[in-house]
Image (cartoon, one colour):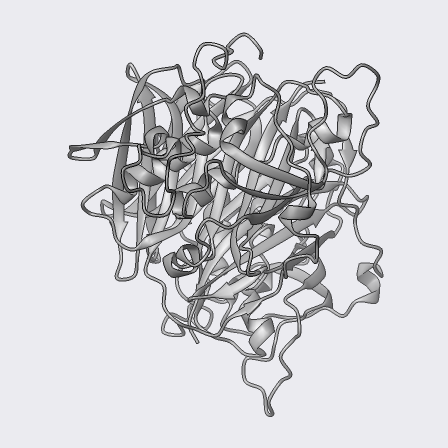
Length: 298
Length: 298
C-alpha cells in the first residue's frame, strides 16, 4: 500500500496563515474547496480531479471522494433540498488526475430526491454512489445519543498522521482516546482492547462547516484494525454510508469550531470489519452518523 | 398510510403445520421463498413480483424488497462470492404486482464485485440499490459487540404485530424490551424514554437462515418513533444499509434457531431519524449490522 507516496512530491499548500477562513476575503480557495471542486458539464456529467493535498496511501482520501460526489449533486441544476443520506462504494483505485462523475436524479418526489452516481476514469467505473436529498421540516425531536462528557480540544494534544498520509495534514486532530499507532515503532506497541477513538477535529486551516466538509470528516477516522492490532496493516474502505442529521443552519452555527468524533467497530472477521462514527457539534448537536465496511489483511 | 390494507383480502398462507422447514420434503415453498422468488430473464434483467403475505401498510415490507434485490444478484450468472454490503433506497411506492430488477455488475475485482440495481414498475424506478459481494478468507478476528446476556426465547412472550401489518405474521417475535405499542390503545400509553427494542426473532414457519432471510430480518424492527411517541405515526424507511459479517457456513450453523436482534435510534429531528440494528445468532455470532434512515411525521 506504500507504493504511491504523493506527499514528498507535492508540498502541502494548506497552511497559509494569511487566509481568513470565515470571510475568504483576498484569500486563495481553501485546499478542501480545491480538492472537491467540480464543473458541471451539462446533462448529468460533472468533471473533477484529484488533489495531491488530499492523497491517501493509494489514491485519494475516501472522504474527499465522497465529498466531491456530494458536491457534484449540490452543483447540479436539478437538485432538491439538502443531503439526507449518501452511500459511496469504492470499487477500484482512482488514479491521480481528472475524473468524470455521472449524477442522475432518478426519482424526484415532493420532499425528497434519489440520486445514482458513478465516478469514472477513462471509461472505467472506480466508484459508485447513491444519495438522497430532501427538504427538512420541523417535527418532534430528541437527541438520544448525547455527546460524551470529555475535556475540551485545548486539553488534548494535537496528533499528526504519519508523513505518508498526505490528507491527514489538512485536519487538526486532537485525540482523547484511541490515538493513531506509530507506523514504525521502536518497540512493540500494545494492542488496544477496544476499537474506540474519540477526538476533536476540524479542517486545517479552519473552514466553516458545510455538508461537504462533514462528509469528509465522517471518514476521517483511521481503520479500527490499526488500533486493535497496534500496527498498520493493509486496509481500505469498501462502502461508506453517511446520514446527515443536521440542517444547513445547524451546520452554519458550528462555524469553524472543532467537532467531536467517536468511532468504533463491532466485529472483525474474514477479512472485513465495520466502522461506525458519530460527529457532534461543539454545542452537542449530533450532526452526522456514518458507517463503513472495511477490508483488511493480516 | 392505512389506505392500502392487503391483509383482509389475502388470507395468510404461511402457517401450514405440515411443512418441514429443514428438509422441505413434500412441502410447498416457504412463503418467504415465494415472496423473494426472482426469474433471470437474461442480460441484467430479473423479474419478480410482490407477495400479499409480505405486504406492509403501504406496498411491500421493505425487508422483503431488499431480500428480493439480494436474491436477484444471487441468481445472476456473473455473481462472485457472497454478500458483504447492501444499500437499498426506497424512492417511491411499489404497487401490488410484478416488477423488474436491473442488476449490473459494474466492476469485478479479484476478490469482490460491485453491483448497481434498480427496481422498476412500468418503466418508473421505485427503488435503487448498490451491493458489494466478495470472497471471504480467514484472518485475525474478534467480536467487540458481544451478544447481551438476556433470557432465552422461551422466557419471552410472543407478540403479534397488528392485523394491518401483514408481513408481521411471518415472523415469530419475542420481545424482551421495547415491544410494539398498541395501535388503538384504550388509554394513553407511556412514551418510552429510549428507542431500544431487544427481541428474539425467526421466520414463521421456521426456515433455515440464509443471506436473504438475514437481509429481511435486518429490517424487521418497527419504526423507533412509535416507541418513543407511544403511538403509531406515519413513517417509512428512505435508505437501508446491511453489512453481512457472517460466512454462509456461519449462517447455515444457525439452522432455524431464533436470532437475537436489537435496534435503536440516535437522533430524531426535522422529520427524520436513524435506526440501527444488530443481529446475533443464538450462539453469539454477530451475523449482521444494519442502519436505516427513516422519515416520520408528527
